[in-house]
Length: 345
Image (cartoon, rainbow, N blue to C red; front, top):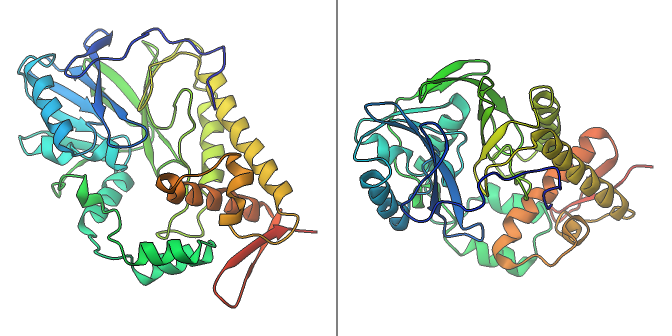
């Protein structure tokens, strides 16, 4: 979804490699590379006087580590990283937290985010397990694609997330955290990632949004083999409703991707409307029994490439599970283990 006209972007250009943009006094916007279609993730450094607190340090790749060395000697002026705050457990946000912590930095995260990240870095698989294969088969994945994945090494968190130390500082709903000379209130969001931490400094109108609040693109909301019956989309809608009374047009939102923006109330409505429209298209498409894989054209209205197929299938399942929870569609299991979905009478 493209951002609406009501959004404004006070910083027209992102920081270059090894550079920083000061978005508020003592608060630096950094950008790290990603080896993905979405080729960057934003990090933020908050001046603590004798060092820095860093938010979402990026994915653990050779390019990102090299860039951090340049950032440390450049914009961070050689001062140490004291704390690393992780908004959620996804690799592009938590990947280098453990690497930075080796020099003594403490890690702040919600308990769920930390547990997910640590568990997934320890779960290294050379081939997909039987539960994962059954999950893909139930979703209607084509036989040739299923065979290809069954014979290939899957993505592992440990491939791009540095090992995490066994200790961390927990972020909880409503907690006040002091970072960079400011008090920030923690508000946990759901849907994109469980217990995703957002931080609000209402006195200065600043919001560290991670991937909960993004301009121009909607955060991925997917269902995976770890929790096949989950309803993350329902949790997303509920989170948007909880955030709406807090959001103000003048808040400067510091997102995990793209540029900092103002206009959060409009953006919350846009993202909610985006998913509501997708649900309507999907419901209309289920005029006869269809698999999750067969729903991709109706849901995305474009061709899905091989590189994004897994994410797209996970997102289709999130929307199907939500319609099923609402009672709008039914599901049935075929003898071959494939689930079909159709509208209820």
